[in-house]
Length: 437
Image (cartoon, one colour):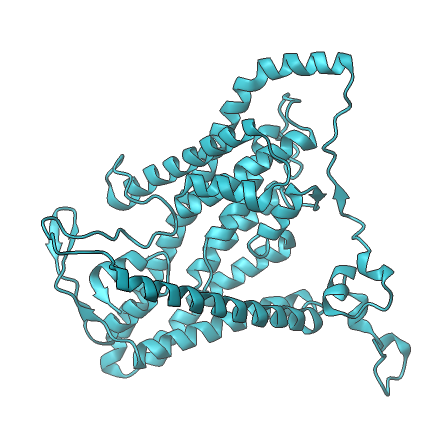
């Protein structure tokens, strides 16, 4: 890059470029030589998947495999249960914080609709969202690897690239707490991608019985600590994260097999599937009991659920879809593909812009950026709900604790709650089950 003009000293020149990594310079197309494009980061390493094969080692290995195969299956089950509990933890607190925010802001809207002080309600909503996003941003500053979904980093790890801190316990804590505050803060993000990263961290750390972050956690269990074994457990945890997010054990297995890992074997397939089923079972069991107080009913298979589509009992004329609908399904697929390509193009340009103008800045600038996004999102949602949103009572009723009642929210409060709930995955079922948004 050319130095800035009219500067008093050369210290002010090319300041942004000095703070960028070789990978970022390659993406931005600002490398000078072809050799610069392949410079790796100094803290990146390759995982050692090779084994030193000799006759004594093979004998010891066979004895260990026969002895510890049952332990391996027990650890796989423990990983699945742990990932399911992580999903329960995130879902519970997201629902708790969201309901607290909606109740307080909704009450304020009801009072201000008559007094004409809706600006005060907007300030309350801004205070909640920006506080949640600020906490999540600080956690990312503590552990930068916890930013984003984590899926590209986990794919890199499963393909032999050891990224520093990617499967650390500190990363897991920042990831889990950060995603629940981010979703509660009203940003248009989901819990699915971070669940995959969290599952991979659980899979990498649980069989080790030790922690680099917390030195006191160190049990005498020197098995499954090679890069080869750790890679297999990361594949297991990744599949469990997908299964917990979408309630799809087979989908989690296929994701780990097709999208994540480049090293696979038949025995690992059964372990991954078993772990995915364990994660889905645990998440479904606890969520159904906590949300509906019906332990063992298994009504909520995954964190992302659009409900059950079926005809009413006794209605023989009902059809979920017809042959004519297939044409519309095709058009929806084409439109989705075009919109996806457009989104990827815009996202790539935005990422390059942030690398040039935001990433080289101080850390507090990134926090301000996230707060700005939260503020704009909140204002747009609030104004749109006051001016464009409309909720209509449906003929169907809601049954809760053996009590049937028709939901009715008066005035602006009804419109605001419907609009806010409709864009939140956490309370989507409430809106779709009771109101037409």
